[in-house]
Length: 501
Ligand code: FE
Ligand code: ZN
Image (cartoon, rainbow, N blue to C red):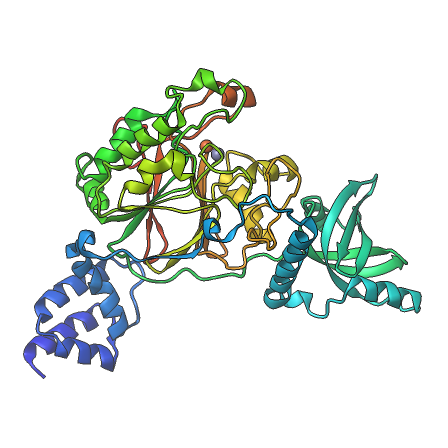
């Protein structure tokens, strides 16, 4: 064994760390031993909890960063794979849409998720079956049914749901003597699909012991090192509004071009490969009564032209993905196809821009994104006790638990009854990105990064009247290798960016 290797091994052992045989093999095989050792010792020093045994895998992880710092993201080819885009799937003709087949599709898809992913739904039977077994005298048996909730009614000491499956309807009674279940039942929304466990107490009523929502399975975050590639997540620019924060957005553009900020911020900017805009690129026209007063640009086409001029200033190697919001030029109902060419034409001409509909499932550099504007978050806020608009990520989590992007039918959120319910989250995203509420927040929920990226619009008169205080001009930077939020940058503040890590 050459002395250099022996010395290297001794240095590591002196740090109280053992070396695995494959680690020794790896070090012996390197002709850049001095370099790799310097890096390795430095990285090991930094670790609060040092490994007991150093394997070749750990060495590679620890020393990879040295390589990645040199990697220029401009030379990395973009990897974008659209998994689902409603623009391609939905029918825009006003053919007679069929509510019944829409709801059957919703029920079937969510039932499939409940059965496949929740062990506690095992043994679920249908409504017809439980009614029959009650009539044949097996009333004390525990039963489980998977049903869609049609209505919810509170009485003095209980909640009564009317629900159905494909074989019949039934009532579900939740007593307040079971405070845990009662607390969960009160949050159950109309049209959601759940599994109910309980006993029949009359020929048409189940007394519930438990209610199970589809939920998302617990996933672990990848224990990977940082990658050179960052995605920037923003939403709700509202270009064309008097309240669009022009100077903050200009600052954003200067930053992403590497023209402002300290060294650290410039290094971050150089790593940006993707920019995702989750709707409301422009302010639109005629979105709410009295909007004309708040418009700086009253022509929708011109709003898109100006928006495109802003986006054209973003470096071309940054791939931009945009979906429509309720202010954009597309149909209101979900699923929403991409912006109409007639209005947003300049946008389609930018070669680094990809326009998709809402919801969009996109695999970006190995990470599965679900991008939606979040139109249904209003309905969730209005109907779920305990959620608040200033914690927008919590409102989004309510959607994840139900595995549906717009659980309530017939509320403020318009839903187009397609032949298939494309709003069921059949796939669990790794990053769930929305906007719409104009407040900022993120959280990891069972391993899913849930992020609502706020807005670039100051408080409007309308928002003032609704008591909404926006939390504007922020961008979330996400490392696409380990899905960690790398930084939250605040472009409203004069100095001291980034605001937090
Ligand atoms: Fe908005
Ligand atoms: Zn919106």
